[in-house]
Amino acid sequence: MLVSCNSCQKKFTVPDSAITENGRLLQCGSCGNKWKQFPIRSEPTKKDKLIKEIPKFTKTKLNQIPKIKKIKKAVKKKKREINLYSEEYLKKKHGLVIKESLAIKNVGSQKSKITNFSSNFFNYLIIAVVVVIAFFAILNLTKDILVEHYPFTESYIYTLYEVLEIFKSSISSLIN
Image 1 (cartoon, one colour):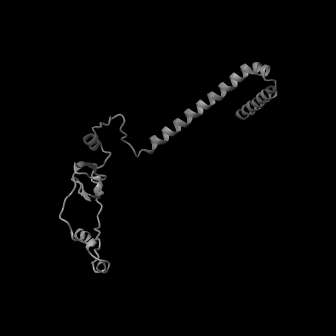
Image 2 (cartoon, one colour):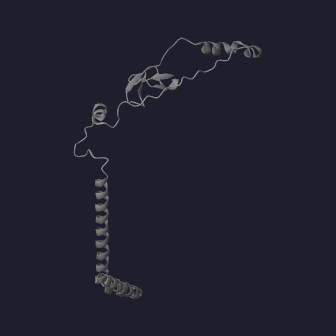
């Protein structure tokens, strides 16, 4: 069944079995308009008449039935006239109100994006440094307890702190 939207006149193909006698709620995929569609009844076409008469023919007469060609119409796509994400459309169709504080006015502003990215990077960097320092501080406080319970970790822990001392002295020599 060929159904057209009441609002934008776009045509859709819907299976005949999808629309019952009681009707069915349809929504246009182009403009979002909703309506109740009832089955379309029309006079039987030549094709329908021929299909009903086919059982009456014998095999020899079946070859004499003229073939019906389907004619496809080229449907020209319309450009969408309304923006589906505009404030007016969302308010009218869905009852949504966009707050001014959440609306982004300067979408093309590259400077704000770069500033936001760099500030996030430094925030993560500071958090990572604090976590690493906290880990080493806790390890320093508990190294005696760890060595008591796990004697094989003694060489690893003291080697780690020697490497940290070497790293600390090399950084201080670079700064001075």
